[in-house]
Image (cartoon, helix red, strand yellow):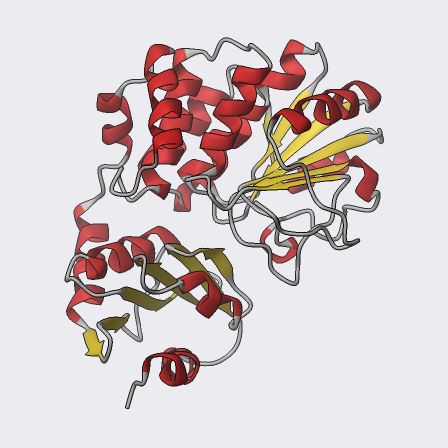
Length: 339
């Protein structure tokens, strides 16, 4: 975790250095708005709800801003949002913009890229912004008052769980489940776990997290399963054990379906996998997965995307699936000698 802020200053090197600045910012502003990335996933919402426990302890109001259409979300995410509404207000961008004017602290979680959040244009005072993320920074980094980007962490949920422990906040069982779901997702269902991640998981289990509950959220519909299998069946294998699969021209995919496709491709023993498909806004999404030999984040950054070395993605606004595939191959050809 040694990336520089845009002004050249080093961000906090230790999570303990984050505790006091966040507390001061929460107490020094009127309310806290916690913003996960668009196209919500379990790590984004788990870490966001977990962070809401901090202003709650400090007796300050907080909101979690989710601007995605609920009906397009996975079943598990819908359930989490329904449950979470009982303890923390969940608002969308329109609701936020209609609220009474106040000095807000904006906390971005599981994201540092201004292109991937719904408040990109509304963040005016960077002194009232905190960034908590585990993805490699991109040129579109939101440079807040405090930027904590720990690429060694499995997930934002891992970082938030450790932060809550520093605040000595007792994590409710339901929130422990949300945080565990975030770790479960971003570790490829626990396929890549460090010692630090194991310790965090143990803390969540002690708080009442249930693996049975989390796994139920990840149950997918037959239609989604079928779409993933169709993408996987379109795979092409390249030199240096790279796999690229392109979805159906006439099919619309959810980002998580492409992510699952890339996960499935990696199981073929390749060093990196890429799943390409059209998503609901008409743009092209590429989901990438890699092992210790291929840094997929570096590849996705060349397409204005990002992530971490093992899990990354990019979004291409213009062009076709074929164009996206050609752009990807153009990037990886000189690195991995694709013919």
